[in-house]
Amino acid sequence: MVLKIFTFILSATSYNTKISNGLTLKIIHRDSPDSPIYRANLTDKERMKNYIKLSSAKVKSLEIMLVVSKNKSFISLKPNRDIRPTITEHFDLYMVQVGIGTFGEENLVSKIYYLNLNTGTELIWTQCKAAGNNHFHQVDPLFPESESSSYHPISCDNCPPNSKCEAGVCIVNIKYHDNARVSAIAATEVFTFATESGHSQSIPNIIFGCGINMLDFPEGKNEHNKISGTLGMGYGFYGLMEQTQMMFRGLFSYCLQPIVRERHSSPMTPMYLRFGNDVLPGPVTELMTMMSTSIFRNRHFNQYYLNIQDISVDSRRLILNPYFLTIRDDGTAGFIIQSGTTMTYLIRGVYEVVMLAIKDFIRINNNNVQEMKTPEMGYGLCYRRLYNPKTVILPTVTFHFSNNADYVIPTRYVFYKSKSSKNNKDMYCMNFFPDNHRSYLGAFHQVDKLIIYDTKHSVLYFAEADCSQVN
Image 1: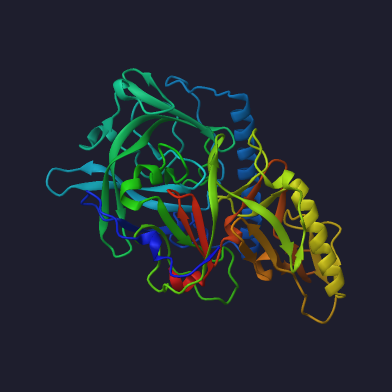
Image 2: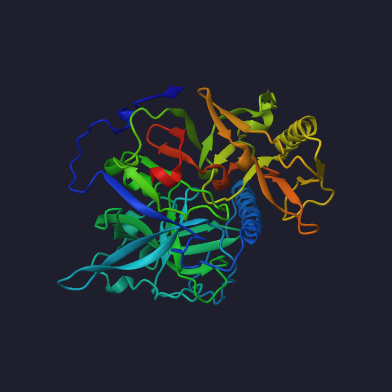
């Protein structure tokens, strides 16, 4: 379904709240100069290798979550368990800066923290100063919950879902990220967000996890780590979208810019996470053509699933087996849109068909390239240009979603162009990777598209956009 003038999303609705029904936050890419873990000395090729490595680790961690969910097993964290967590590179690609708590007597302020932005999990949490022996390293002091006048742990008389009473408070245990686990006190607190205009907006009574025991979190090796937790944007009781339903009506949007930019391109402009009435960036007009498709959740996960029906390579429809596209009862198969995973993964039965179709296209349309016997950088398929002409003809790839919503990936993002480390010749590598269980639409293939989530009505909207202009 192609939609124009979709202002019905923002139709006037009255709410009994003094808080604005719109909010715009700056998204910080892990490799932007605004990032607390920015490394200016990395080349684009090194960054790309890191993204592939981190995406692989992220997907493997999600596979572990699937196994745990199917087996219904969970290792509980005990407050007296004296284990120092292993700190490695973190997986999430984007983060936001938030203020938590209320401090002071006259000029009330909040404590500022960086939280990973994750659309695949629901819990909002940060490391707290409360009793507990297992905290991963962060530069900023742990959140001093006992000093915040707006901090209120939830009593055992009113424990929220999936939590349990321990020592008079509700404890929530979450296991994710390749065996990473957090044990947190379920509490309510004021969250303050710096807006696009430079002002701040506070939202009271947000249920969050006051982290007291964190094990095996991959939150940055370096001593300068400032990431202290996660802003959960996925489905579920604890998710930000569920908690702000009356304010933002389940609406949020983003428009991501290219992760690896051309050497002489202009610098990355700010990117924003928009909620409620703010989901449409200012320069976007009502005449922008948008497509819509269904989003839904699965009982095993809090992630956003899309109803994919087929894939095309250039103009060739692949007529894929629905067995690999439709989510199964055990949580396997299906297609997830995931901003925290950099690269796009296709379940193996789909990946092999897509790769063969791309090979056919390259063979038919080019006589100046050769498939590399040993692909580089962790890719599964790479070509090396042999001689002139310099132009290599590459295909587009289109995901066909329900409601006739065609999601087109242009040629510049289907392949990553670089130089071979062996002979410095032009090299083209296919930006798709195989997974044994499911498919993920990663951030690399969400760039230059305005994407709007309507979680209340289970609809995803998307449109082609120059995200350096519309943010």
